[in-house]
Image 1 (cartoon, rainbow, N blue to C red):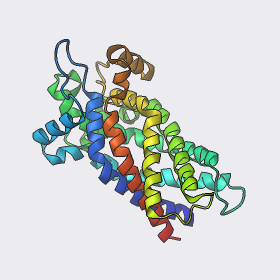
Image 2 (cartoon, rainbow, N blue to C red; image 1 turned 60 degrees about the horizontal axis):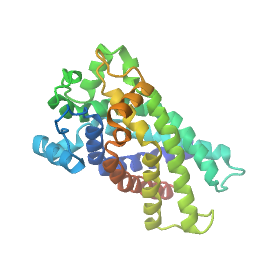
Image 3 (cartoon, rainbow, N blue to C red; image 1 turned 90 degrees about the vertical axis):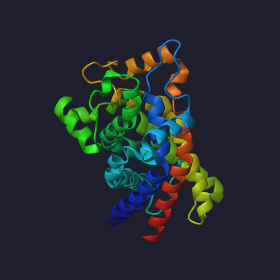
Image 4 (cartoon, helix red, strand yellow; image 1 turned 180 degrees about the vertical axis):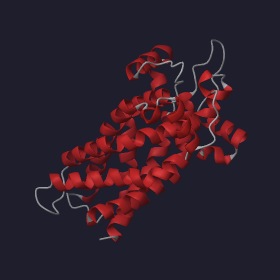
Length: 297
């Protein structure tokens, strides 16, 4: 239990650091993902990431870049408690003996297991966040899916529970969320461990400095998005889809229709902001986690 408490504390600190650094990038990513295809002969609402930043700041001020942060901020403790605690417990199960370093393959398995657990927290949190972030972009396009204006995270949750099938409605997009979190976390923790061992020159990584941890954490975060990004696009378009008049019947349908209407490029909308976010945000997360965990003994 002591190790679980330490992972909980360190994970919470790491998650808070990740959220503060990365949320503006995430807002732009979701806005680019959720904007509908333009009508023939019409330009898209956002021509790219920088245009989305300019329009968001002009219309909503700098606070618009942090729209939807309430939901993940409120759940960051629970999310990171599950992620790092489950990973820590799986590490304990996979070790040949107490204190023995894990191989890269074992870290991949531990990351995948943590991904299963966090999916059930990530799905409702992501749904609320995506609805708030996409709201302004969809409203200006005339999409019928934004007839309801949300006042904040709790307003989104209340509306979904009342009008979209109860609590089950908060888990819309669970399948693509799991398809993102399981391989994504497997890749992230595997790459993180592989880079740490490479930089340390062996399996003992306890002596690595903060610069090495920042580098390993940043590249590990990039590997998460590089491995699962099209799945994230599918998750986002399903979670902001209109409940009464849905465009998509499920994940496969969303994938096919996006590919048919926008090509492969459509499955990578917002990829630039996602990658730009992943490096500093995950570098901050892993550094904060490692420093806090080390200080707790």
